[in-house]
Length: 112
Length: 117
Image (tube, rainbow over all chains, first blue to last red; front, side):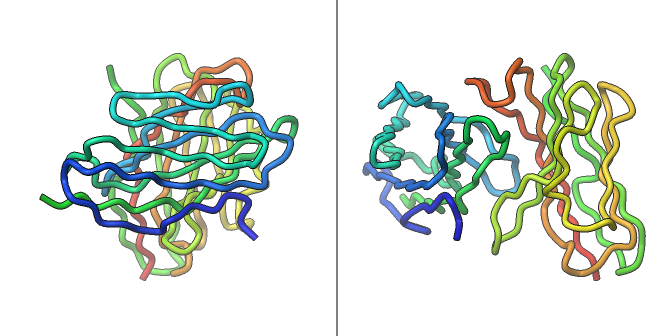
């Protein structure tokens, strides 16, 4: 069973609307959680990195939240733009064993 | 400021052939990672190096896969012999953190799309 589950697998939203992507994980003990954006045909690009003590972090129109107690994170996209069309990957790292657990990504399509 | 550079961008070859993927990390970065991405499995870490030394290769699927980092500015991932199930996008990433999982991002190249016929 994958240690990082993302939902929804894909979604289509209208330009200008907001959306929220979910990431649930079972990785323990927790070190940090990262959200990456991957455009088609490109490598992933880091959006945010959050540690145990952080429960929200913003990067422009992207806001990530973390609830380490429930092992959930979300990525909120505000006022979506066509350039937000991409896959958003949640990655969780554990303390002590140097392994990363990857979600399979949320595929977002923004339409005009 | 050059990012991580991978070559080739696309590779199509017949099964049984040797495939070599190349990566030039960002100058000054002392960690280098090789990943594989497929639709079914998403991103998977294959191996990573610290200061040119392989640290964890537990993600390498089989003995057909090997990776080297002869110096700080170059790494290769080799598949010999290649099989159709090796078809995937292979990414190289680098980072400059003291501790592997501190609050620093990994910088990814744009990948090599490998197709084994």
